[in-house]
Amino acid sequence: GSTAELVDTLERYVEIDNQHIPQRALQHQTPFQAIEAWRAKSPESFVDSVDNLTGLDKYADYLNWLGFESFPRSSVVTQP
Image 1 (cartoon, rainbow, N blue to C red):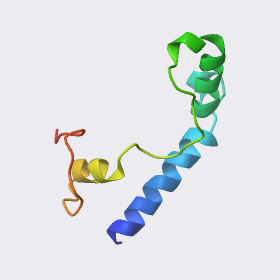
Image 2: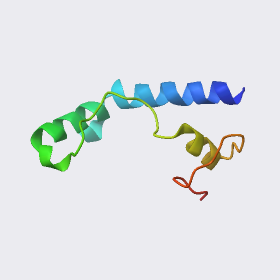
Image 3: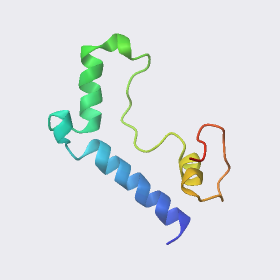
């Protein structure tokens, strides 16, 4: 597959995993539900509100970290 197909697959996986699949370790909540519950209990721990966003902060950095060097790099993620 192409790099675009990989990015699309990763984006769908992150959304499904974080927002639709309850996790036993999180008392059968999705990660998004768990962070929202934590925020409701301890608002002082959060500077900004949690938005219903999917994916990584910087896909290009993640793909570069995986070895796909066709993306511009930043200093946020380093090679292992």
